[in-house]
Image (spheres, rainbow, N blue to C red):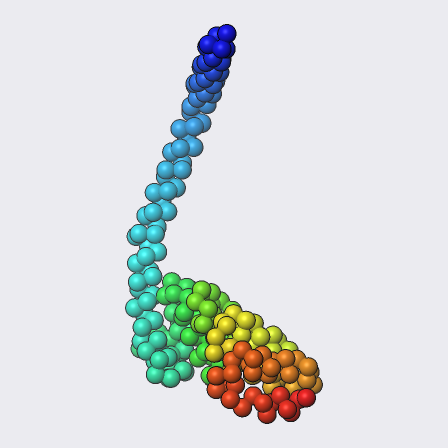
Length: 224
C-alpha cells in the first residue's frame, strides 16, 4: 500500500510537471514575438549604457580630473581665489563644476565650498557644500561644519549651531570637540546657556584629551 501511494504521488508530480511545461510552451508560442521584442530592447539598452559608460562617461571623468588638477593644487597651497576662479589660462573649481558636474569627483564640491567660504561668499559656499556626498565620516563631518561656518557668516546662527552639532555626531573623534565648542559658543551668544553647557560638558566627558578639552572648564564655569 505504501509503495502504491509513492507511485501515485510520483504520477501526480509528473502530471503536474508536464502540465506546467505545456502551459509554458503555450505561453511562449502565443507571446514569442513580444518576448523577443522585449529581449532585443533590453539587450540594445544594455549595450547603449555600456557604450556610454566606456566611450563617453569614463573619458569625460578622466578629462574632468585632468582639468581640475591645477585648481586642486592651488587649493592645497591655500590660494583660494585662484583655485575657485582660475586665471584665464587654467580652469578654476567653479569652471570645472560648471562644465563637468561631479565627473571630477565629489571632493571638488567640498574644495569649492571651502574656497568660497574663505572668500566670504557664504551663499555660494553653501551651494557647493550641500552637493558634497563623501562617505568618509571625517571629511563628511568637515563639510557639514563648513556649512555651519557659512551659516554663521550669514548670521543664521541657529542653522550654524545645528550644522556644528550634526558634524560632531557624524564623526565621533577628536575633531568633534572643535565642532561642539563652536556650537557651544554660538549657543551662549544666542542666550541658550543650557545648550552651551551641554556642548561643553560633552567635550569634557568624551574628548578631554583634545585641544578644546584642556581648558573647557572655564567655559563650563562661565555658563553655570
